[in-house]
Amino acid sequence: MDNKSSITALMSAFGRAYHAEHETHPVFSDTLAHALINPDEYSSISRYILGGIDFFAPDKKDSFHSSDDALRYLVNTHIAPTPLCRAAYCESALRTAVRTGTQQYVILGAGLDTFAFREPEFVSRYKVWEVDHALTQSDKRARISRAGWTVPDNLSFVSADFATDDIGERLTASGFDATKKTLFSWLGVSYYLHRDEIEKMLDSLSCLCADGSTLLFDYADAGVFFAKERRVQSMLAMAEAGGEPMRSGFDYLSMDSMLADHGFLVYEMLEPHDIQKSIIDPTGSKITAFEHINYIQAVLKKH
Image 1: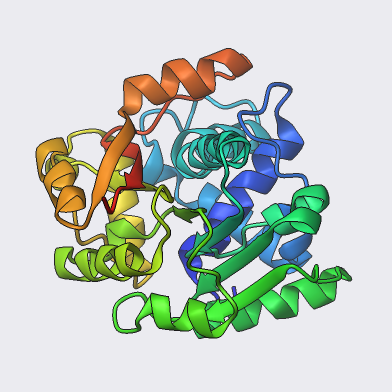
Image 2: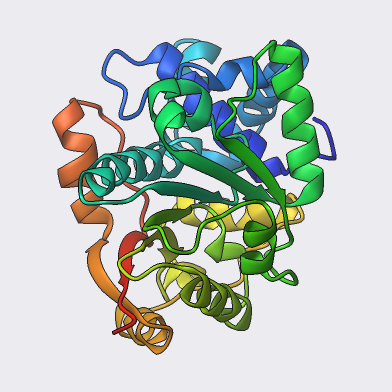
């Protein structure tokens, strides 16, 4: 795997790609993700996941009929559920938001997200920004080039370090219009930041956003670091091993209070049982929502 690319971003893209190609009832069908992963990487990731079966599922390793069966189980149980469900939730929320006046879409921590290439009609009408670390973003642009894709005119790339940079300054410099209602997706990022870093982001966005703008993100609850579920323990260990350790978890009241301190009011919060009921079950998929992972939409109210 390319060390310049975020390992979590690459694993997330692999999970989306594999699920889209192997499931009759996908939770979310990202038909372009595979094109951003070269064949050697795809094979390497597959072998890596299969090689970890003693770690991921030691009680099941002798129950699979083939390596394909084992890989499908491991991906759908350990790798894909959160990337799939949060993408489905976010893009559904975005469709609703544009019907109520949202005119811009900012993907914070975009990783190897393919939205701007899967939804050409949307990008022809609305401005989209992808914000991520410079190394991850440089790697992604190289992958886009190798895939032979053309970057849409309304897509802008903004390099930033969420822990140190002022996101508002970076976006403004790239043409962001602070007078327009915007949906900000911030998926797969908050886990890896300390509370003060998260608050810095909230402060930047509250100063930048137009009233009525939406922030949608996922976060771990306060029990994640003491979880008994094997796959949650595996998630923590994988993040640590990949050099991107998880650093934060919040109970709902703490999250609600932190958002309110920066002018954001919670519009919707989904816990794992909500995610299962509203996102997974309607598709007919057999995957299960990840324990201790929650999704939240908050709306900025300045007045």
